[in-house]
Length: 161
Image 1 (cartoon, rainbow, N blue to C red):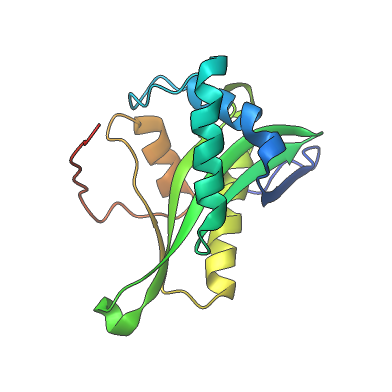
Image 2: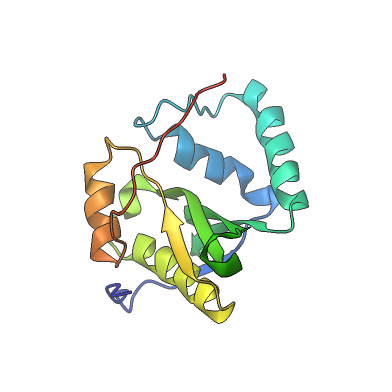
């Protein structure tokens, strides 16, 4: 992976998310207008997000991360360890729900999050790291290619809700 180096003035750390991060994580998703996820910071939606956080935290192979700068959440992503029989029983890391706070984009935070995920997968001896991105996210596609991902598959979905 050929990620750009972070500017030395950014003291960003990446760590597992906790319940106290939820309001800031939700705000990241709510500010995103692409994808039609209907995320919102409305107080009546908080119980849904809390329940989802608890489900995520209970799954051993799923980790929700935040990128933090000066005590504020400036990015987030989630990883899932997948093992399949294909590839002689290979294990891979799936990255989902990648967001960088709008006012912090272009400062290397996304590259740092992706580098962290790839380094984690490499340290675990995994076969590959993969992600999907909404086809409308042209800037995100350029970013993923810039940090070393290759567009190799076409994804399909069936919406149930």
